[in-house]
Length: 452
Ligand code: PLP
Image (cartoon, rainbow, N blue to C red; front, side):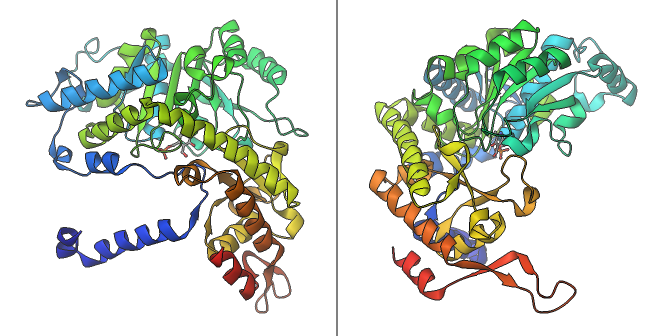
C-alpha cells in the first residue's frame, strides 16, 4: 500500500476506505462476494505485463510459456469443477463471455466465412465490404431470452445493449400473477419465434430453473440452448443445483462470471459442448483482445478453492441463508416476490412502506446495509426508481453467518423501512410532492441499526 501511496495518496486512501466500508457495512448485494487473499494476490502481480493473444499453446506473441500453463490449468480446473467438455477462461467479464458465446454460436451455426477464407490474417485488415459480407451471412438471427424487467440481464437482448444489435431480440417474461417462469408459455413463444438461441439465466430471479425442460424446448425447435449462469455458478459448482437444475448438463453453451457466487476474481468464462469449442476459442482476436493472464491465474486459484469440499458446504449455506432471510422478511411483514427464494437472492417489494426502491436503498445504506434497488416484474416505478430491493446472501455467508443472523438482518431491514419517510419537497414546481429520490430515517433508528 505504501508503494501505491508513494505514487498517489488519494488512490491509496480510497483502497483503505473501501476496506473500511466493506468491513463496516453489511454486504447484501446479490452479485458481490469476498474473494480470497490468494485469488486477489494472484491477480495483482507482474502477470499483467504479459501479452498473450490467441489461446493456450497457440499464440500470436512470443514468450507465453507461463501464460500457456496458467490458462491450461484454469481451463482444466473449470472442466473438472463443472463437468464441462470445454472451458474458455479468457473473457474479461460476464458481458464479454456473452459476446464470445454469441459470436461463437453464430460462427458455428450460421457459418460466417473465416478470416482465412476471406484472405485476411488480422481482423484489422478487414475492409468494410468484407464486414458487409459477414453481416449478410449472419442475416437476421433471433435470440429469445428472459426480459430485463423480469430479471434478465442487459446482455440478453435488451434494446440498448449490443446484443440487440447482433440479433433480432425477443424476450419472455415471468407469469404476471406468480412471478415464476411459465415453461408452457415459453415453449409456445419459442415455437412461434423459432430463435437461433434460446437463452436462460438471470440477474434477479429468485428461483431455480428447470434447465432440462428449457433444453427440451430449445432442441425441439433446433435452437441452441445457452445459459448465462453468472449469478448462480457457485451453486452449480457446489452441487446445489443438480440434475434438471444443472445447466452444464443441458446447455450447449454456458457463460458465467467468476466473481459472484463463485467467489473468484472479477471475470468471465464460457463452458461449452465440444461442438462449439473451436468457435469459442476464437473469442480473443474476434471479440475481446488480449487476455488478462493475471486474472486467469486468479481464476485458477478460485476454481481450485471451489473444488475443495468446503465450497459445497458454502454453496448449500448460501441457499439456506437465502431461504431463511426470505422467510424472516415475510415474518416481519415485508412482501417477498414469489413468496421466497430457492437460490442466493430474493426481491423485496417496498411499496407497502410508502417507499420506492431508490428511497429504501438509500435509507438502508445510511443505516449500514448495502444492497441494491431492483425493478420488480411489471414494475410501475420503472428501472431507475423501482419498487423493489434485491438482496443476496453470498457475501454474508462467506462471513460465516447463519439462520439466526438472517433473522437479525430481516429485523434491521424492517426497522429501517418502517421508520423511513419520503422527503416532501418544499421548493419549485413539485413543492408538496414526495421526492422520488430522497427519504429520511429517524435518527434513533439509524443509531440502533448501526449498533446492531
Ligand atoms: N450476466 C448476468 C446474468 C449478470 O447478472 C451480469 C452482471 O451482473 C453479467 C452477465 C455481466 O457481468 P459483468 O459485469 O462481469 O460484465
